[in-house]
Amino acid sequence: MNEHIRVRGLLALYLTNSLSREEEAGVDQHLPACSDCRAELVTLRMIAGDLKSMPPPQPSFRLAQRTRARIASEMAAKAERRQHQRMLAWVIGFAWIFTGLTVAAGRFLAPEVAAWLRISPEACMTVFIAYAIFAGTASVAFAGMLATRQRNERRFV
Image (cartoon, rainbow, N blue to C red; front, top):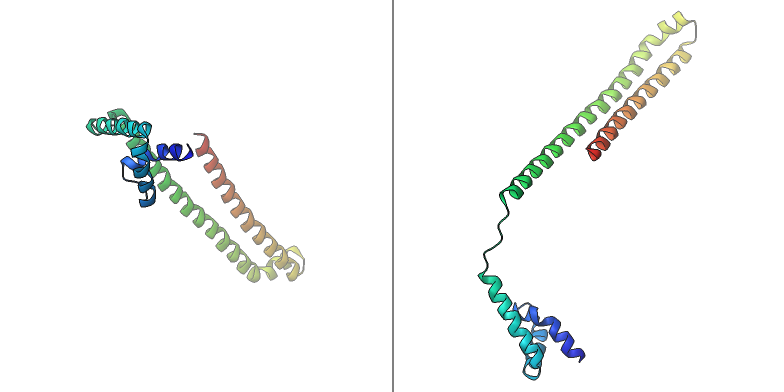
């Protein structure tokens, strides 16, 4: 009976020539001895013939329209994400360039600013460097928060 159940499960694949040679040989051996499987195979052949005579399904005009609109929308969203990523890269790059320029300017201005504030040039330079690092890091963090917020807003729209 186990062989019968196994062969019955293979009949649809047998009909479409999708079995291996060994499986097909097993089904060929079983069919002459089993009237139930032969009847099932005849039924499957009739169903297959009826299916072949049916016209292929055609999507409705509205479905095709909605699909095209969805694809266009997804492509536009993808292009917009790429544009935002490029903009974010420029903002982050600008923040770090500005940070570097601030440190460079601090090296030249530190003695004058230190004299004006009546502190040592080393302390003034330390403040310039700390400010530059804080400003650059804050700019990058702010750009990241903006990108995250924009991504989250798109999820809920």
